Amino acid sequence: MASNFTTTRTIVITGGGSGIGRAVALICAARGDNIGVLDINADAAKRTAEDALRSGAGKALGLPCDVAVEEQVEKSFADISLRLGYSYGLFANAGIGIRGLIHELPAATWRQVVETNLTGVFLSCKHGLRHMIAANIPGSIVCTSSPTGFVALAAGAAGAYSATKGGISSLVRCMAIDYASYGIRVNAIVPGSTETPLMWRNIDAAEVIRLRAQLSKEIPLGRLAEPEDPARAVAWLLSEESSYVTGSHLVCDGGILAKASVSV
Image 1 (cartoon, rainbow, N blue to C red):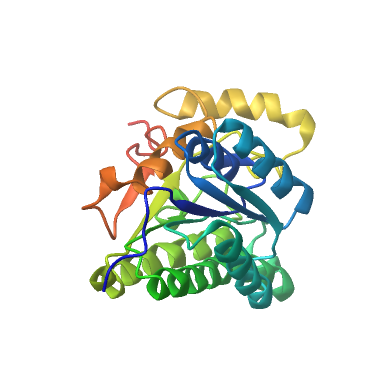
Image 2 (image 1 turned 60 degrees about the vertical axis):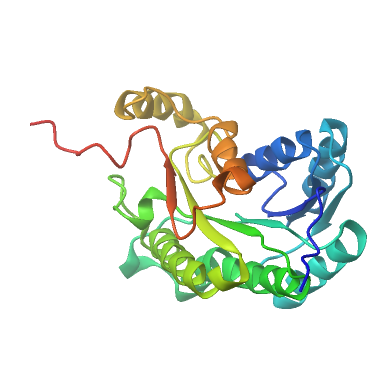
């Protein structure tokens, strides 16, 4: 059966209203891709889509979507397929971080983190894959994992977030095997400390400058990432340049995972 893939690709990005997701949208737009932006913040999704058009996207669409709600995810993919064409690429990136020690964490908070971060990736991939398979598109999926999926944060109190990122990493490996026969590649990006709203969500505003300086001393490359740093890695995974890469984790963390925490 002939593929329905054309030279103009449609890339869907969840959590595309800000941070790394927004940066990926603009990088892919600059190379002429159609851009579908999903974000729980409708205004942010619309702004990114408008900026994607200005950056060179053939078409762009911003839609409000809570990735934890399947009906919204399903409808969003249907709308994007109708208006932009079937997706070649998916960046399953939407996520939240709520800190708390496990013995103090309300079950409702645990569920909120799991449903957004892990179930949200599952639902995004589920409906993205359905559209790719229906259109016979040999596409690419990238999911956002984290160093916390491999090691614990020194600051602690990230059990729920870390558990979801470890789950995403396992899901990526399984999907890479399950969908290789369809020509669909599945990989993960592992961004480190990045200057995004999520990075500082749980930090008192008065502490941000001090903690940024402290982190910069602890990260081997000497600085936090800008959103464009991991975004360029994601864009590569969404391109044909990475056509033989699947089931992999592309670590873009400034050296965090390579560094032991002890000084002697």
